[in-house]
Amino acid sequence: WSPDESTINGSNLKRYERWLAEHYQLNFSTYHELWQWSIDHLDDFWKSIFEFFDVIAEGALVPVRTGNEMPNIRWFENIKLNYAEHIFRNAQPAAPAIIWSSERQDVTILTWEELRRDTSALQSFFIQSGLSTGDRVVGYLPAIPEATIAFLAANSLGAIWSSCSPDFGTQSVIDRFKQIEPEILIATDHYV
Image (tube, rainbow, N blue to C red):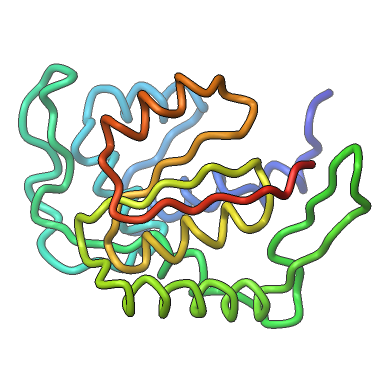
């Protein structure tokens, strides 16, 4: 399959290329040229991605990174941002946010308004429980909408989220959660 010209020109990649031409005066004839620029000018590339996607953040974009070799590279050290804020920033209240089903359950649709309401309710519980930035929340639940709600509620407060599915072995879950030392554990007996 090869995309037609209309699909290519309407893609996010083409939008990004046009944006680079306008904001960075960069023009590429081929995808490979763009890719090579992204490798050769790593800091410029990631700064442009940050700007192109209009990431909401506090702080300065520079330096983009410190260090040159993984795992010792630190990215955007002077920036604070919140993933949950980005998830909800273009939400359309009645539109589907999550469409979910399993072998045992029919399709469930959660609208953006429902996702926001449920996330806000759990966030309020976390606040009342004394959860704050840097605290750890873990979930012992399958890949269900409630897992996304718990992640977003924890993330909105700057808490660290981790989860294990019930199909993990018992000892694996115990070992993982013991290392994380969570302040809050979310679990469900809702199996899918």
